[in-house]
Length: 369
Ligand code: NAD
Ligand code: GLY
Image 1 (cartoon, rainbow, N blue to C red):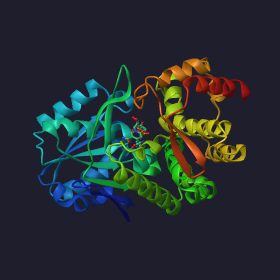
Image 2 (image 1 turned 90 degrees about the vertical axis):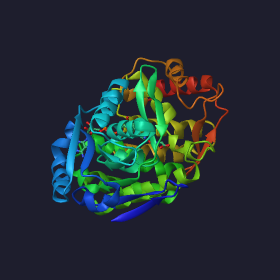
Image 3 (image 1 turned 120 degrees about the horizontal axis):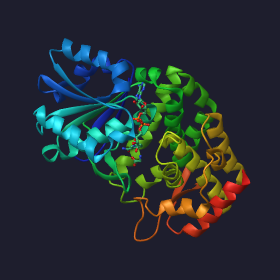
């Protein structure tokens, strides 16, 4: 088991990565589970595979697991979903000193984390991430949120978990498309800040996706270390360090909006395509060479991730796609900071990008491929 500390004044916690962690939940959580009753929020897909080991471990430790099993999918991250979870936690008499468990992907983690942030002005929570995306990204760093009609993740809070247990066994039941989508966030850490890790991904990406446990553990551990380092430096995304984690997200967000935040384009797939676009736009601006942009594209292609807008079959032109970016929550006093590349492994925040130029670039992309 690898243990990665997330160092935050007064709110430090550990991310533990390994096998058999769900079945060891009572020992891993220790005093965090201070009462007999243990409230757990999950979704039906996750419950089908992973409820049993959690239930058995808690019962064996003399606990009383209490389950809220939600319908799978992004729809749970809504006002209605939030009301459902918070009403249930109140009915379960959860107190501020208690810990609620989020067992699932980013949807369950974001929703349960936000419910914990506002329940009685804040109770504790433990993340048990079961997707690759959640293990390497969403369970770490304390961003919690729901979606509204106005957009994704616009209502939320920073609320750090007390513990994250990333059990690699859970990846064995994850559909391959979800694995690939999560892998986009793994390779992102290489592209944005660690050229050596990017090269490792070029060599080992296929083995990660094929389920090789040793390389998976390395991929998750290195990703979490990178995220923990950035979160410790800039917990609330105020200095620009954490904003680099948004590499690929501004382009990706526009494409997710255009495809209706639907299964047509999963979040990780949108991030992959967004990173390819950010690399090519960086080359267009002369920050990196065309060869380096092509290397980013090739690494995403090799993982079966999308890297060309044309393949999406969308009708929109560049202006419409750029228009979606105006609703991005990263808009700041009329400008939208873009994460671009000065090199593979060296991202930077460009606050001077004109959306007109982005629209022209996207039109070229739509025509060129
Ligand atoms: P998800 O939670 O919807 O999970 C994807 C699918 O896999 C779902 O159908 C789920 O039921 C299923 N599933 C989960 N674990 C499984 C397992 N082990 N075996 C079989 N099926 C399993 O999606 P996700 O990709 O994990 O997360 C996406 C969400 O995360 C989005 O809402 C996004 O906004 C959010 N996110 C948040 C952050 C953050 O910092 N908080 C970062 C990135 C993404
Ligand atoms: N997923 C981006 C962040 O946590 O900041």
